[in-house]
Amino acid sequence: MNAKKLMVSVIGGHKCDEEATKLAEEVGRIIAEVGAVLLTGGLGGIMEAASRGAKEADGLVVGILPGEDKNEANEFVDIVIPTGMGYSRNTLVAGSADVVVALPGEYGTLSEIAFALNAKKRVYSLGSWDIPGVKKLKAAKELVEALSKYIREREGEAC
Image (tube, rainbow, N blue to C red):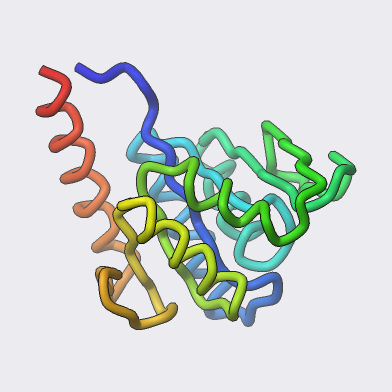
């Protein structure tokens, strides 16, 4: 069995409406409940909502910040990685994960999707960009089965 924890990046907008906030919280909870580590850009909006959801389910949250100040991270981040890279940190958010979950967002989110696809990562979308290579999910509850299936596949490879 592969002892390394599954890393799941949640990407999405710096600002989000109430519906997207609830979705991100649910996604964060799901990630924690399947035993994965949540990885985000560590700031507000979708990133903060997903982090809050993961913490509510006693999950571990990693935030990769664009700036150099650890204090910029939202209050739910356990491990803060300040990069000083600006938007270039998107390559780390997408590339460090095993799986990427895209929620509503703009061009920063699109860039992270592109980086993830280029790195041959599995990318799921819940209300985000609809582009080739991204698996669209209709509801957050579908993510439970998708992540569980990924974990089973990964464990099968380790044997």
